[in-house]
Figure 1 (cartoon, rainbow, N blue to C red):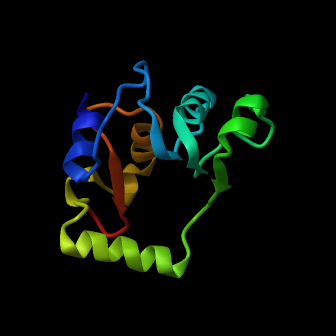
Figure 2: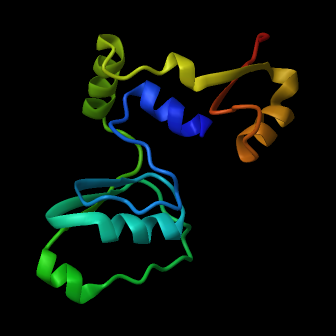
Length: 139
């Protein structure tokens, strides 16, 4: 629940629990390595829509797709990793203009001596953690 609220505060149009069906959409962004989320996202794309995979389950993972459905619906499926300079400029402008807010996403600031705890917190979210910053010169 806290992550859904954070997404909405940051500017998301809608936040949906992972066990809920995804409503049909013209654009679907898959930003998790979860195969189940990928299946849900692919099922939600409208005819002629676009799907962007920003993350994958791993180099050895395969994902079955409903080829006949896609043959009929003709979605565009793209893949992205990282960000080009234009993407970074656009993101910075969104943050500068307030269209997207990010300050609230940083929930923990830790010193370099707390690096193991920071990685553990990132790997096992708790205490409302979203983004953890490690300050090499102190928190």
